[in-house]
Length: 54
Image 1 (cartoon, helix red, strand yellow):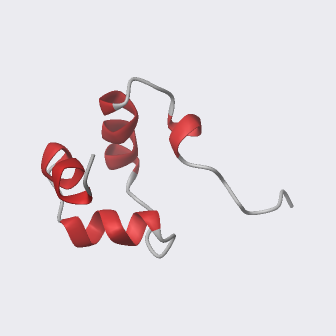
Image 2 (cartoon, helix red, strand yellow):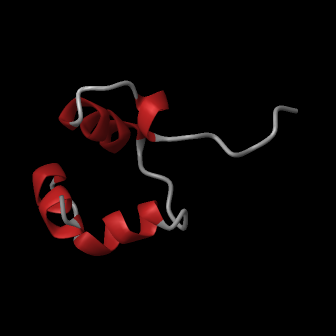
């Protein structure tokens, strides 16, 4: 799936998808849920928390 097709399916810009993929932008919780629903998986399967537990 292209960034443009994914962005269109989610109602965001291709630039937004590019920023999310590069780790420069964290999606809102509603957008994260949309992504997970689109791919029929859990948010945790799509987005990985790189921050160490404190």
